[in-house]
Image 1 (spheres, rainbow, N blue to C red):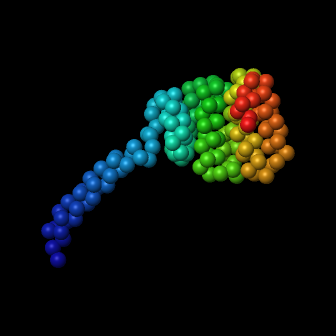
Image 2: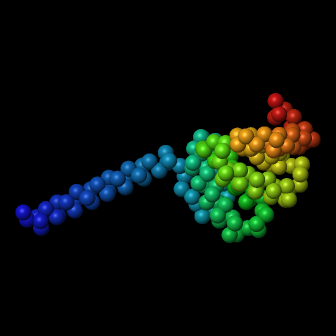
Image 3: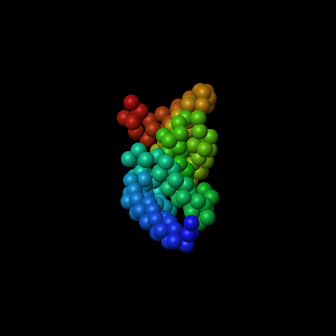
Length: 166
């Protein structure tokens, strides 16, 4: 058998397959989600958009990419980092479910940063308490979940957001 004669044919077929599969991947990229940008703010906007459209894995990935960049640029307690952590917590909750340690760690860290930076009575603090409470309830830590739920109600009632509680 003459392998020299077969090699160009095989290589040509391999190139055609690579070209077709590469084009297929680029065609599906808008369906899969958005590619992370160099700008953390753009990544967070894309993460929120992906979350709104039910693409929780893409939202989690984009928020994680933004968090990585923010942690190298910002101060460790910046509100931007807390927003990214909160987005990761919500995305992981929707993607994986309640019993997810990554979501709970992200939400708890976001809560601490929000409380230090914004004070205890800010709406973002209430949202973070709510997420931590939801995650704890899903992990059957009902006493701790109740504490966070009560704190959410207190903050929102004081801020006049009682319509959101119904």
